[in-house]
Amino acid sequence: QVQLVESGGGLVQPGGSLRLSCAASGFTFGYYTMKWYRQAPGKERELVATITTTGGSRTYADPVKGRFTISRDNAKNLVYLQMNNLKPEDTAVYYCNAVHVLGNNNYWGQGTQVTVSS
Image (cartoon, rainbow, N blue to C red; front, side):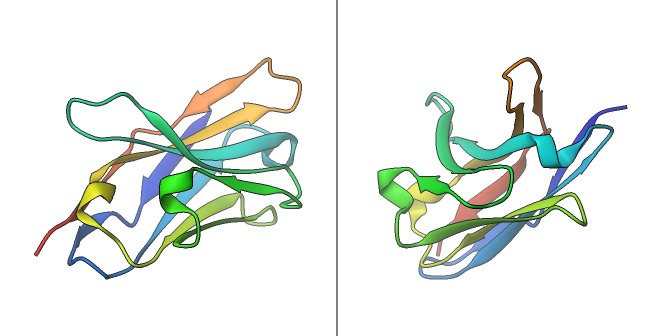
């Protein structure tokens, strides 16, 4: 059974940090590009960060560049999103996404809420 389980969300003050984790199971993790998306209320889901299968390439959306870092541990089937200097506009549900390198499989987690507020 394929599962992506996000954790680490919560309420944080502006300027604070959070680290999201996504635990993968039920598929061969090392064959999948991993992504973090987010969706704020009333807005479309947007891509935040991407990391390739070996972690050799990482890309970020402009609003989070320099503040967020995506990483992965293929031995533990985990992907992380370290979020620093959080802003109120980062408030959203954050989703983990796995895409097979051949593009034939695409899995989603259930999401974790991140709220940035004083």
